[in-house]
Length: 132
Image 1 (cartoon, rainbow, N blue to C red):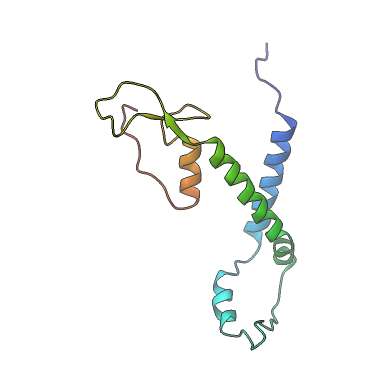
Image 2: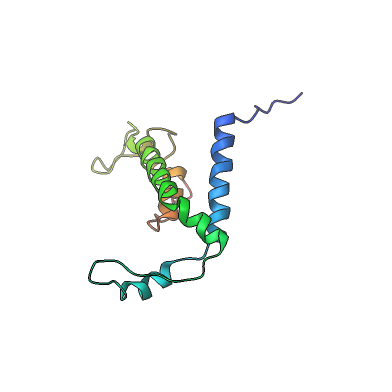
């Protein structure tokens, strides 16, 4: 007997889309170092006349980067709306610091989803004590 639920089609499409973005991003060259060099070339009109060699992967990445980043930002904001702390309502000896739980998944705050997002953006929290 197979007790596994079939994969949700919307979740599967989202996963495939995110994996495609990740693969495309990993193949594209970073513009981080180049942007520092280009910044000093801004002309009096506020533009940089750029001449460079771009690979197909670079062009693919750059062509969709704006829309992809907007989508990621909207997704992150929605996740932050879903995963936020709420008072767990338990009895505590420290009334100033009540026990908090995530209002969405009910894990002890900060929940694993919020921790993962925090780590991804470089604002990670220290690990919870073992008793949590």
